[in-house]
Length: 60
Image (tube, rainbow, N blue to C red; front, side, top):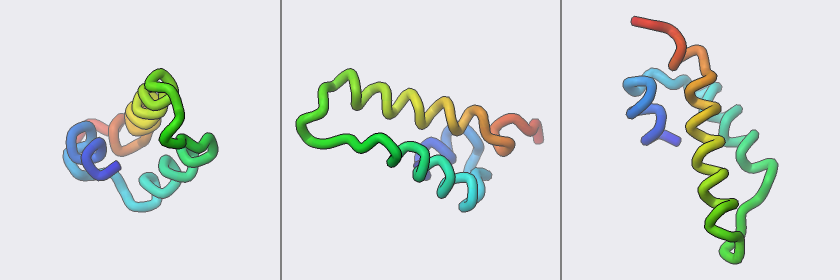
């Protein structure tokens, strides 16, 4: 999560936003037996949620 915050929000992603995103992503668990499609969907969801955050959308 920190890496996405750094890359997409220049490190400005707040702790509260990170917590909300992590909780949303953990709602659908991934296991070692999950398919690669499911794992890639999780990554895409994480990127989408960061891009929908206020920290990403605010131009500084």
